[in-house]
Length: 309
Image (tube, rainbow, N blue to C red; front, side, top):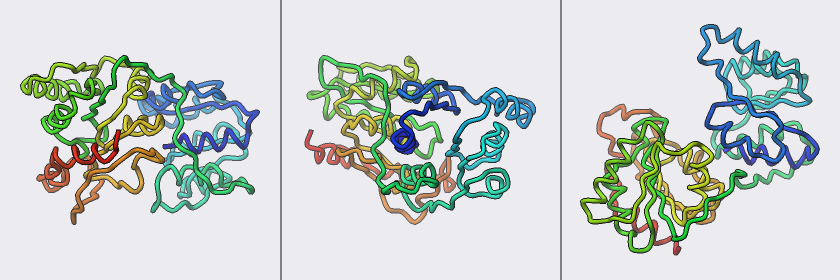
């Protein structure tokens, strides 16, 4: 969701080169940007002394003409300050105001793609306020037949996850039109296997389970090559949006107005209005998980049909 902000920075500074610093997954996705000169995984969180590790990383990075952090976190502000960069931008907080030069107050009641773009453009006078679509530069995989991608995982926590048997029911409904591709990270292999087992029990055979078998580049390429994607609110959902893959996303405890499929022209959200949602918790605090449990396979199937693929 930060990629529109990166594209805006690239358009306003076309002769600049970018250094990306972040988590393993984000760096592996962003390092293919045409203006990327360096991509560094931030592993300071693993250090016994994170402050010292942040200092060492900052000195390794050196000074920039402009530095932006999309994270509202003390060590992120500190990292920018310690590079010696004069113009540093971060969302307003007690630590950013103390450490950095530009700390705009950004309303949280809007999509994160908008929030990040407003942050990145906060010291640009001639920005028209337009926020572009998501953008990744990994080449899509080409499949011989139309593929339906199923992504039952969500690394944030179990509360964001719909159920494997329901995903399988939806996949079975469209198995005559699409080959099925089951996605999942290393920690979601068992969940993907449940989908596989359910498909077998429904006598569906045209599926491939790649959960736990892809790196980030391969994951993005496979998602980009799908003809249809059904997913929880997750990183892969945003990858699909970057490639304009027709998508149905299932939302429960998270804020769909802030993290939906940004500017994906063929996308639908399936969710239920509940008094307890969005709770933004990793696990259901009430123990019933009804925000997800009450969503039926039929609802998702109908949402797919409205996409008119």
